[in-house]
Image 1 (cartoon, rainbow, N blue to C red):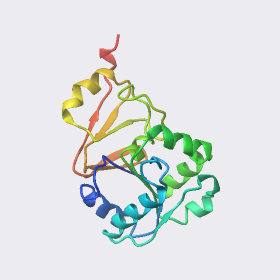
Image 2 (cartoon, rainbow, N blue to C red):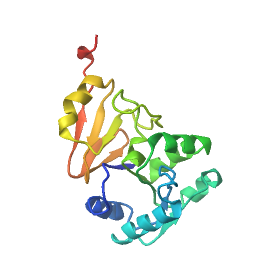
Image 3 (tube, rainbow, N blue to C red):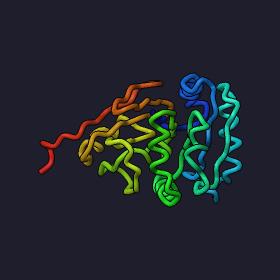
Length: 198
């Protein structure tokens, strides 16, 4: 199961984090910070921010992983969820592929929860032809737009070549086994219209 958040501040995603805590029965979370830029904020500093954020909603066990190559499936499945924060989609894609984590994450997602916020969500979608050219993991056959602004609807419609799930700041969705539903707030599905393409 995926939990995708549109992002923003810890206060804006408080309701999503509360739902997340309930979803995993206040269990153990592994934080993978590699989407972020260490020159901007160290992984250790990001970890303390994330740990405090989850403690606010009753999640007491949050572990940090900075060495992706050392991860094993047995270790991963000892957690109830994996959390990816915002940053660079392309950087995170490269880090996951380089560490050969793709298959393990696919297995994990079938039984546990992967929570991605902003770029940490977008990375699991597929290229749609909209926005910045980046590399994606393509775990789902939708593209994800986070920090969504409804003024961008027509711009998105004109450039996409697959369906796009759009999630605004503070909003979130659950994606499970090919189906998605709103968790907090509402998302918008912009469907690809093949009749408009020449």
